[in-house]
Image (tube, rainbow over all chains, first blue to last red; front, side, top):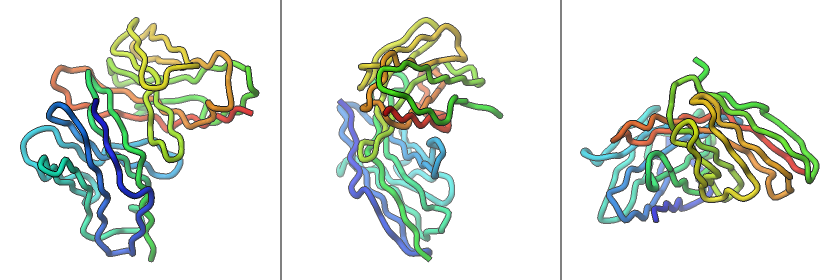
Length: 113
Length: 115
């Protein structure tokens, strides 16, 4: 069965600092991997996704993630944090038929001035 | 653009009461699903549907019923609410195209409290 593990329920950074949110996956088949972002009192929206091809994936708002098969990782990064990046971030893997996504437990990103 | 619409946004129930969370999408998506979000547990799949008349159980289906009579609507029913069902519920939809990569479109959530 597919699963994802997000390391760190909370990550704090200063504005302008590097953002690194960690995600490791387990999958018996080549994985489709996703990062979603949830702003306060809103639903989730897709940040970026990896399916096949280029292992470095660029998403919205300056975020990117790199698929590393050897490390079973799909970490999310952004070179310079902005106050508006404060949100909860979820890593997910496509877990079987159709669109059944399996989500991690989430990482809350806190950005301080 | 409406996208995925959930109602109500907030609801308080007493133990044993029943209610239905409504979900509607206007994107002609075949796939619809319900997740619940609990602190420290992420999102867990309750039920899903791959088309009108077809539903199946997800990871945590107990205590919930669903039906899919139209492509647009996918209501979630709690027949006898329990405090353990206090949560934030999200409806999500997607295309079912073969080879599609699985992007889900989410509603804004329904916050349910069971006393």
